[in-house]
Length: 139
Image (cartoon, rainbow, N blue to C red; front, top):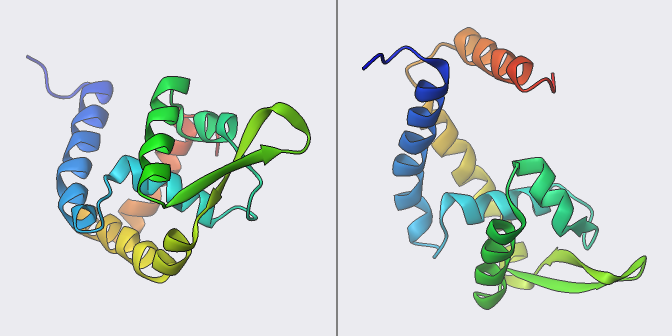
């Protein structure tokens, strides 16, 4: 089996990242996928994120996104509030628990990213990011 196909290598890198990340997040009762939701919300004005925004940003399906949100809401990391501009939709906001953990979780995410890319030079990491953004046509 050929190991140099880009799609295979990207998938393997993604799986390796989760393998490295999940033990760090487990002590906070989070997975890397759940953390990604919190990280998105940390970077948005409070109470402005829609479910569809999360789906588009992370290229996730609606059921996957809802499953992550249900878990985070159950564990009191987030809350869903009525969208004043759309009676059918909900907005996602950080709950107090997640707000209190911000100064712990954001640096933890950065530490994991650094650990995952520690074999790359700064220039290689910048190049990798640029190439991935180019592949995804968002850079």
